[in-house]
Length: 173
Image 1 (cartoon, rainbow, N blue to C red):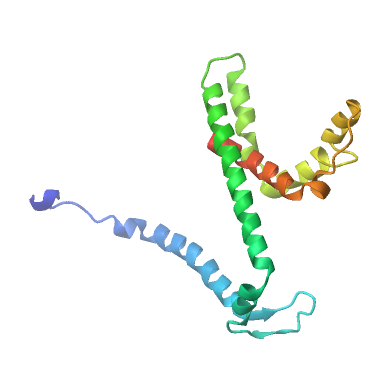
Image 2 (cartoon, rainbow, N blue to C red):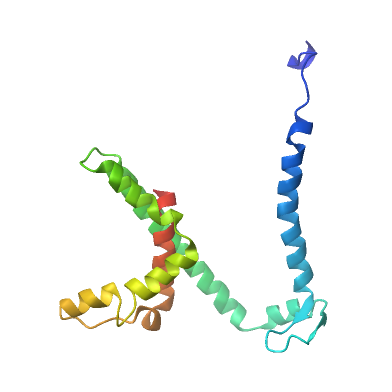
């Protein structure tokens, strides 16, 4: 047959069209809604203030001095999360590739953080591990006679970097 296609070939487009349409809508509807809301007035303190804002929200954003601080913090966070997850993930991948007793259980425990919802992960780290009074890290610090560290009070961005890196480390692994 010319062009490498047989005369009996059936187009698969009608078969995949429903799923492609659903995925397209799933992508486009939130995007359109986000753009629509970005042109609206909305005040959480006074919900009666509403209406069309035009580009006023964007001009406020671009003139807000906190924008560049927020962008710098975001780049800092992304950089260190990537460094930690890729570096440690590669190291752990090499280690977990070796044969050792309990390898299957260790692999299961290593990928477990990936299945924890981010909100739950943040709450576990904040309240069970990093809490300055009742947290596990505070218990170990007191047990060793060291001062307790208030992670979120003293090192908020570093704490968030550790939590996000822990969450995504199994993906890199």
